[in-house]
Image (cartoon, rainbow, N blue to C red; front, side):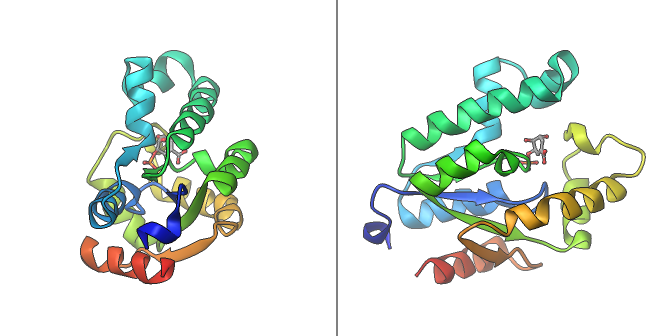
Length: 172
Ligand code: S3P
């Protein structure tokens, strides 16, 4: 599988709570590839946390940084890259991912997403009164775009290891 990938990276896309970072880290370990988390790289580059970037500079500023950071990471492949939930919505980013990598949409049901996002309360887009309504709206907006990914794997309620196996099967 490593050889079949060549210089291409594996790029995980999908909504907040889909498990992109947890699955990505384990997948990278299995494949012997470096793991890179785009949000972490954005935080390092800005020397601010994601909530601080949103607070101080706004979402548009975050998005332009995200485009640049994802492009830089893709240039350094091959690796397993976990993107932030909104990264794949940018057309330039999608084109770059197509060139340099294999995109995998980790698709999850609303109840699974809700359970998982509750465990980490640092997502600026979910600070709203009704995070479930926000997630639902994002599902409507984004699922047709995530569906352009090369592969789709169901991020089901199972152990991370099981989902990693599903990803490896999908890649084979
Ligand atoms: C966002 C998802 C977050 C982070 C930012 C915006 C989004 O990443 O990039 O809060 O627009 O869906 P995760 O998907 O890793 O939570």
